[in-house]
Amino acid sequence: MFETDIPKFKTSTGRSLRNEEMIINMGPQHPSTHGVLRLELVVDGEIVIEVIPHIGYLHRCFEKHCEAMTNYQQVIPYCDRMDYVAAMNMEYSYVLGVERLLGIQVPERVEHIRVIMLELQRIASHLIALGTYGLDVGAFTPFLFMFRDRERILDLFETTCGARLLYNYIWVGGVSHDLPPGFIDKAKAFCKYFRPKIKEYNDLLSFNDIFIKRTANVGVLPADVAIAYGSSGPMLRGSGVNWDLRRDDPYSIYNRFQWEVEVGKGEMGTVGDCWDRYMVRMREMEQSANIIEQALEQMPEGDVQAAVPKRIRPNTGDLYVRTESARGEIGFYIVSDGSASPYRVKARSPSFVNLSVLPEICRGAMIADVVAIAGSTDIVLGEVDR
Amino acid sequence: MTPQQISEKLKAQFSDRIREVKTEGVPDPSVKVAPEAIGEIAKFLRDDADLRFDYLMCLSGVDLGKNLLGVVYNLSSMTHRHKITVKVEVPVENPVMPSVSSVWPTANWHEREAFDLFGIRFTGHPDLRRILLPDDWDGHPLRKDYKVPEFYRGMKVPY
Image (cartoon, rainbow over all chains, first blue to last red; front, top):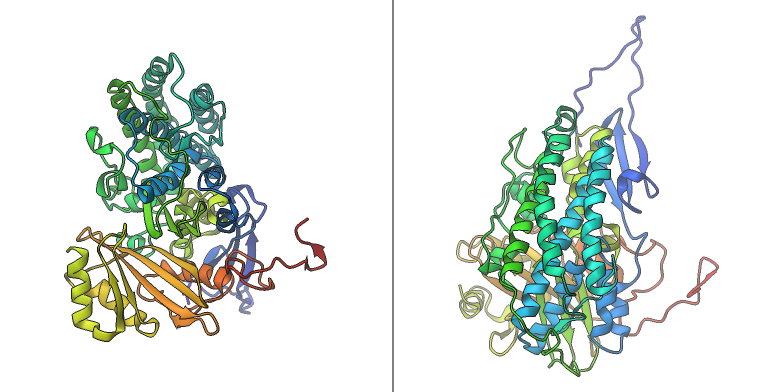
């Protein structure tokens, strides 16, 4: 049990005060929990002794749905709805798994389009993460700025496939629509517009004194704990672990582009604190813009549905596929029994796993810091609960 | 190390408790092990200097039919950059196996999920409660023979 260093208080007559623990419920309806998460806090005064997360409020039996579908493609829209702010990343991972089961090679143009969409989605998702994180610790303006810029990405998605949030865009073997005329210019213009904005966010939020005081040295996640708890994505990299599946377990065509993996360095405090996790996301957006620009530059011609199979019936077998979503390692364990629909799909969602380390890093923090720590893990409850 | 070398090493260490090795012609090479030995094998996989499987990517329950439930461990090593899949099968009447949450803390929630949705019990787990479904839910939905209950606390299911 955590030992507090609060001295035993006494009244002026010398009587000692009672000192006891208390349970506080944070959520499930609380703005700082980013959805329907309930945290049971055991507190001694302001100090958190234990955090017990309760999840499942948004459980929709995603895995059972997958088994009930009549074919593999029907699962894709459900993947969208797991992580609804980074839907492209979700559907891509599942589609990649099915393609590997089938042994399909997708055309070059499709690979390029997918990389562009995935990285645009990563920027859009990080903008939400950072904007709402600002809200969590009391900065309102950056949120508005970031949503303004995210809107431009959603417009790009809308011109491509008609949907702004839940796309069903990446198909097994291809994508649902080719890029519309003028997309490449618009996307280039976006990258050009977006780069200076990162400096604006930095001036406004990242290096703001109050923000640093709220986040530096708070919720420190050491590298060994992060690995043992299976953390991934910005959570893991924030702790100084140089690990990115796009580079370390290569898929698609990421190895053709010049970009860097950003890691937390403890610039404002300790390596692995909330500020580091925040800053990894901020810097990743610039790297994503680099990748997008290079992919746009190299875009080949071709038919985007040339490799779409008429019928999907993988051989009996199972595989685990993982890709780097905006939140970390999204993995799908897919079992095929040779029929037209999956026998079993397990989604290893990054938020679910990243959330499981929360009790570990909240121990000994103040109540207000729990809000900052939970925000810095950037969870999406749709994906935690599935 | 290649999957062949990994499975050879496991066989040398655990002999007959390694039930089956599949490294050819499958997308993910896998090793099937005896359920009662999984705790020990997990510790060996993590601590052996040549293996160093420090990262449990995923732990999934599976209803294999034929009165068998399975648990699949997808492991990777950040140090050596190799992967292996470990599989365990337990009978559906008595689905009990040791927990690996002391080896990889991330298994804690994954095992709770497998318990919740498949009813697999992990001995030595620090906190084996339902995680996604309500505590008083009946049955384990991801089993293939699961029937959706008609009522939950007097509410009609499905609505």
